Every structure is written in structure tokens, then in C-alpha cells.
Image (cartoon, rainbow, N blue to C red; front, side):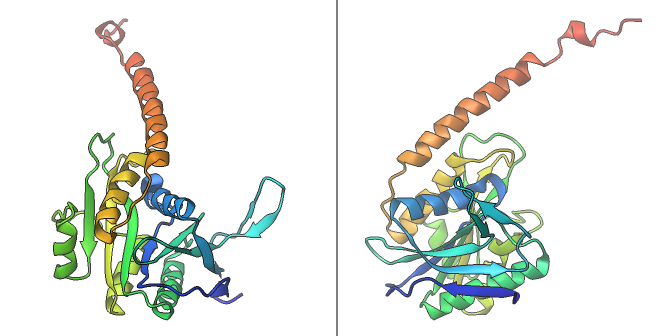
Length: 250
């Protein structure tokens, strides 16, 4: 197998497409957004990328069929411009793998006429979040101004340590290749799958791209997760030691 093999599944006509990346990461924020867009708009896979840099495994469906792990680019039609949505079950297992796959994705973006790239992810706070801000990083000041206009925050030295993985490389390599590129990161605890953070990121995308997305499914998942968090907090509170528990006996 080559570093990256790109399987062509379809060749639709794309109208001013925008690339949106939602591979697994912190809180699965990007993945939740990507899945919502693909499912609601009945996205069609047009490219499948296999790579020796992905984990050495196959996925197995409910009927027992095995499929080599891959990432996919979906054509997602909207009422305005088209979306090219990247998703999958895994990211690359090595630094060089992230570079190879990011380059291959940007090659497809160039071939299909993409000029704008949005990488999506979560930024961990280390604690449960009530209000989910969306932080950003972008390739030039004009993109920053546009994002600030829809409520994206740009904080000095955040995220601390930079943006790793394919999200960071799509912005960094994308900028070097002439794309307008940005990363949108929803605040999340980092402990759990976070539909509310995904909602916040999707709200920003809707304003940026003029999308009209039904948020019902994400809202239901967010309510389910709130119930889980409440139960976790109740258990934690029950286990908090009292003064009597802390008294030294001896």
C-alpha cells in the first residue's frame, strides 16, 4: 500500500465547495458536527482515503462485514454552496501520517475547487462547562475579523501548546497552499463526548456559511449527556468525606 491511497467514489459537480474537517478528537466535537451535517443533508461519500499511517485495524459492522479503516470525504449539498466534509473513525497514528493524510485531503480540495477550509475540534478546560465558547485560529487577519463577527473568540496563547493532529495541519499546510483556513474549537471538559460544544460550533458554521441545520438530534444528545453528568455529580457528592470521616482515629 502507498502512504495514502485515494479511492474515487463519485465525481459530482460542486458549487463553491467549503472543506469541513470533523475527525475524532477532544469531546468528539468535530465528529458530532460532521455526522450531523452528513446525516441531515444525506451526504454522499466521494473519496475514501486508505493509509498505512492509520491504525492497523478493520471495522466490523453488525452483520460481521469487515472494512479496512479509512477516512472519507462527503459531498454535502446545502441551499447555498456545497460542503466537502471529512470524517472517519480514526486519525493517523504518527506525526508523518498526519502530514501525509492532510496533504492528500488538501489535494482533493484543490481538485474540487475548495478555497476555504474549516477544521473543527474541542479545546479542553479540565472542568465541566456551562456556556461553551468557540475559540478560533486562522491563517490571516481578514479571516479572524470575519470569525470575530460571528462570536468566535481569539485568546492570547490559546490553545496552549498549539493545535495538534490533522486539524492543525489543515490550517498550517492549507495556509501555505493558499487556502483561507481556520480552526473552530468548542470549549469542552475533555472528559466526555460533548454535544453541547458541538452545537456551539455548528451555530458558528451556520452563521458563517448561511446554513439552516436542524439541531434537534444534537439537542437530544445534549440532554442525555446532561443527565449523565448530573448522575456523575451526585455520585461524586455522595463520596465527599465529612469532617467525621477526616478525623484522625488512633
